[in-house]
Image (cartoon, rainbow, N blue to C red; front, side, top):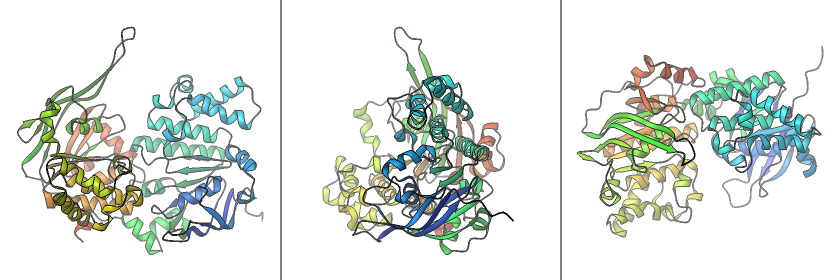
Length: 546
């Protein structure tokens, strides 16, 4: 009987020290697992669990303050922890490669994507320019990108998010590495693009026999592609095994908690909301025009003939792919951009055409919680200063605004004493709670949540969704919930609006839209959701009231 082939990646008792003064001494401690040829191993866990630190250790890309103090990382038998910087540079791209979460920050904005992929070949091979170009075009074609010649000559900003991620995969696979590391590569993508990227990774992995280390917090993705699962908590591996075993029969309480927090694709049955009408749009449109004197004018209808209504105490979700117009509609309603035509009725007032001077008193009625609170909170101001700024601009005294901020910090589950701290001193979930407190400080009637939980771990996501559900009941808020995550939409939304290419193609009670979608596009979205059969979490309202 022949011996089993040696793994592509073997991590043995890895320990990475943290700088002093933190909540623990090691970022990872005693971590051991393997990745075989042709295998996809998913590493899951909350933020701070050590999964990305482990991945960056393999690539030799750790921050200088993080030091490996024990263990080994063997890539095809060679320990990368003892490799010289020159040897690590040779290994990257040639034997191992990485796909990052946000391709826009990983790609050079001033070079065409073709030049960036060719750079890998220039560094690691002796191919001539003609051969390099041919190889890159063939790889772009293998990524199912339209018109490889045009893609080769395009800059990153000219591509969609899904196309940029395909370019990153092309650059990672151009040298046929033995190991591919994917660090949250689908988090910010809509469900159809996400499904395409996952299929592409699986296709490439099967065709080339590549071992894949896939870092994610999305259990739908895990259910869709994983051969084996490694669960990490606070720097340690608490459970690992075949995907079916870990997902269907979890043993560790932490794994059970994570899986229990995954929202299902089965919406809760919610009674119709009968509160007063808070917001109504009619024939709402946003058109962008480009081109000049010597160029053909290009017209893009980002939103067209959008009519929606939201009542006090109701959550209306808008779902659709990137470019469907959902965020454009939200920004028009918040008057962050001016609509091209149509009405936006807030109560009995049409704000669509109001000039800024007359619009200002209406702004406090509509507040927005954005996807990334770190970018929407001023890093140089304490969170307390950020929360009280809005009310003070509308005449509230500093003392009253501070008292309200302390009250709201308690409401969103944070210690009021933390008002004196800065955004970087909080976790992502805590920052999103602060962003919510800042919005509530304005005493709004309408809250717009624009992908407000898409980047959060499942357990933190559940907490923030339950918090939204709670504050809605307390303040009788009308919530417009923008998301690409159908699991989240299923649990939080009373009614659902589906948008495609700037237009509404379907709307109705969420449970009905999921159970009996009438539009082919809606059916395609639901079918594209990764691991749509997976999920044991309770419905949010039940969890919130428990």
